[in-house]
Each structure stands twice: as C-alpha cells, then as structure tokens.
Length: 119
Image 1: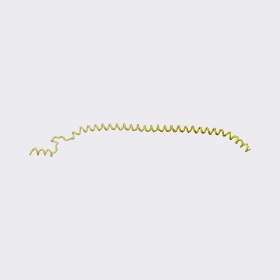
Image 2: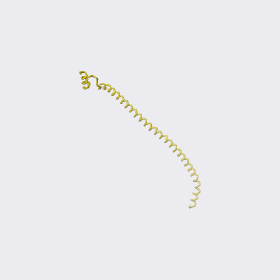
Image 3: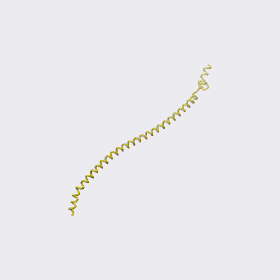
Image 4: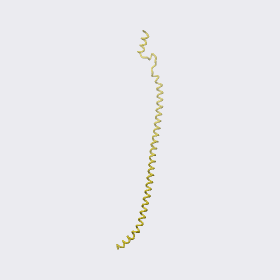
C-alpha cells in the first residue's frame, strides 16, 4: 500500500503549491504593511520625543522664571533695607562728627592757645 500514498502525495503536491504561493504572497503583503506601520510608528515616536524635550525645556524655563522672581523680590527687599539703613546713617553721622567748639578741642590745642594768648 505505500505506493498509492505516494501517488496521493505526488498528486497533492501541485495542488498545495498554488495555495503556498498565495500564502507567501499574503505573507509578503503583511510584511510590507507591518514595515510601513513600523516606519509610521518610528516617525510618531520621534515626534513625541521632540514634544517631550520641549515640555522638559518649558518646565525648566518656568522653574528659572520663578527663581528670577524670587531673586528680584530679595533684591528689592535688600534695596529697601539699604535705603533705610543709609537714611539712618545720614542721621547719625553728623552726631558723631566732632564740633569745632573750644570745649571739645583737645587739651594740647587749648594749652597752645593759652600760651599764645598770655605771652
């Protein structure tokens, strides 16, 4: 009985060849479609990565802007304190300067004047 089986296989081989070619063609079509889909997804991924970088940079920029605002407030506070302290210094400085009255003059100057005045 083995010979009849061979005949069935031999006669079935041409019948299977046509469906296999169709399967191969279908697989090739599927590979092309999937390749196109991969390319499309790669392009979309690149675009999303670019957006991610833009979002990161935007967040960094906002963070730095908040920092600038904080530093500007600190600078304004320091300027106000400096102005207040400068005004106070302007009030105190004249009080610290010696006056030109004879009572506050050094003793050597007073003695020198007396000697000159009483020769």
